[in-house]
Length: 280
Picture 1 (cartoon, rainbow, N blue to C red):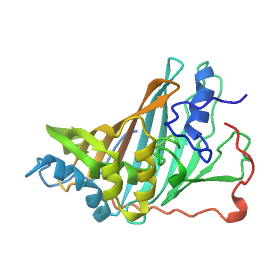
Picture 2: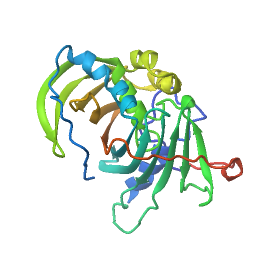
Picture 3: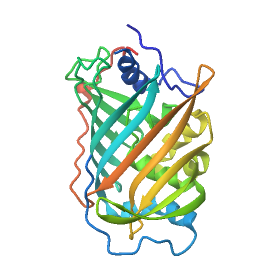
Picture 4: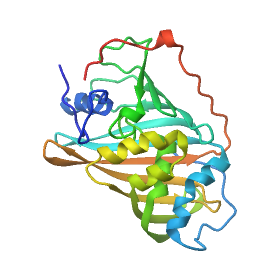
């Protein structure tokens, strides 16, 4: 069965594999967070927008972190959530996630976790399905994706999630809350994708520049939670797509904790990358 693309951004290119479409379309038919406490006060000392824009730099200083992701979207009136667990290196802009798909609506079908390797300019996936051999990897050029891999892989690249905040504006400080035992400052605003692309690190600039052209709206509402060291602990983005004349909403949440953990990403050998046709 050919799965029709779901949540496809406008100006969809032929190079896009519509990974999220395949994941969600098949489902339509049928994390506990911990981390070391931050000693500093998370209350902002100055402009909230400037504080949020600096979150990506704070993560680079932190180096690495464990990551939990979730992506919620609607398909044919059914809301599904795709979850991921792994780690990310904010200095090398590389990460590894195990993305888990929910059961089919009838609860009868289990889906094998998809292993995703996140690198500057490319996404590698194993257990992709859709006709790809189980022992092969799929490589996707994220600079050729209309969403810059903010949603395509079923999980937002943690580096891109943070870099998107460089375009933050109209930011308000909501207040101090506790997140997994850590006091954090809650900020709410919108992120201008084009502004973020221009200000992003060179490794992620290409992907965000592609996203700036592909989304139904130029801005993305967000809720961000920063600890006393300015590190992003949680961010929730509300993405909007224009699909067949209707707007489709996708909510992506990234949680970061366990800063300083070892994160190793080994790219597959060229001979292990699938070069055949991908269904969906």
